[in-house]
Length: 257
Ligand SMILES: [Fe+2]
Ligand SMILES: [Fe+2]
Image (cartoon, rainbow, N blue to C red; front, side):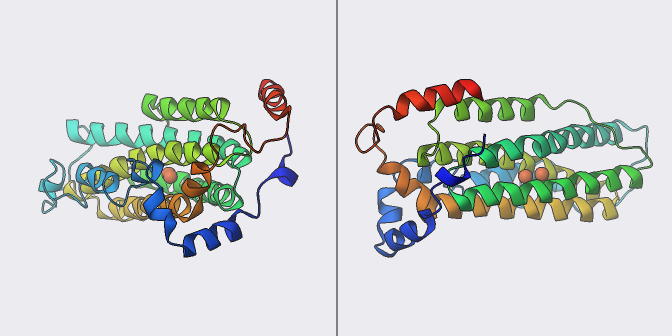
């Protein structure tokens, strides 16, 4: 349902003035310190440890120096191809999920971040098809239960939060960053494995996607810390300055979704 008119497009200017007061970081004691929206402080580096590139002690990164080409038929090659199929399914699922996330975002900057990331994700799908081609295979998707679960969880938070609230945006950012961190871990490991197996061209392509996922994760943190966490903190229970009957209307809207 079109809700553009009711979107809080004034949020950026409102938040800009709030940010100037310097209160954002000190008062965002909720989401911004969480693993998701506060990723600069913790979550990303932990994801990086799993992804190889940023963590020199991970099992996959120890093989970084190797350049022996691992041929089709080996167990490692099969594992690598299987992981490609998994992330190929996950990316395609995200292309379908991101429009719903954009539509349900309250803030314009978050909505456009999701819309932009859908376009980026389409490119990532094509890039994976190129990687399959380099490996002499046709692109094939294999259901990724992890991403399926993360997308289900996203749908749940949309149902459980009210329309046009910044709490909804916080919840969407948390969900989106869970997905980004899964992708960062996956691509980090794939890059390291591809290099270890001697597939340097494939590794370069996968690295491009890894960089994009990290940029998206950082952008989401910036949006959260820029104004959304702060706005959400002042929303309270939603009863104080809301018009009468809004809750009822929100419930009806949810049923229609
Ligand atoms: Fe992606
Ligand atoms: Fe992504």
